[in-house]
Amino acid sequence: MGFLKKFKQGATDAIKMYDKVKTNKKLTYDELYEIMKDGTYSIGVPEIKGSGIMRCIKFPPVDKYLVQVAVTGTTITITRVYSGVEGFAKEAMGNALTDGMYDVLNKENIDLNRATREVGEVLSGLLGEKGLLKDKP
Image (cartoon, rainbow, N blue to C red):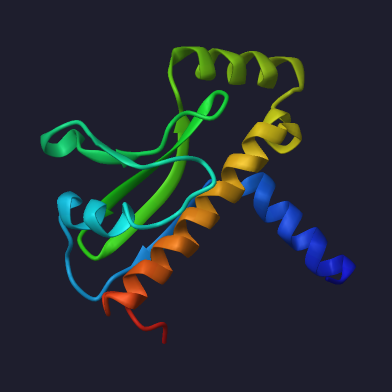
């Protein structure tokens, strides 16, 4: 991998906190979970949490973050979120001490940003096998 490509990937890992996957039909959380549970993820096994509009698919917490999957129409969004009040407090303290640069310098943040991309890649593969992945233009 060339220097420029490594630099670009490093910048993406430090900043981009989400990944999106487009499907060719609307899926419910139950349908998506049935597809996702067949995948192998480095951050653990997904679970459906919540009910109604608060429903989502979550992975087990890693440090102060966790990866969460949400469905809106034909778009599946994979993002990292704080795993609780403690995670938010650590982040706020880190930002206060580093003048807002904590996200860029934080290895946990970078690792979970990579994990969101990995979940998106595995999910894209699973959806592709089922014929549900929207073709890219």
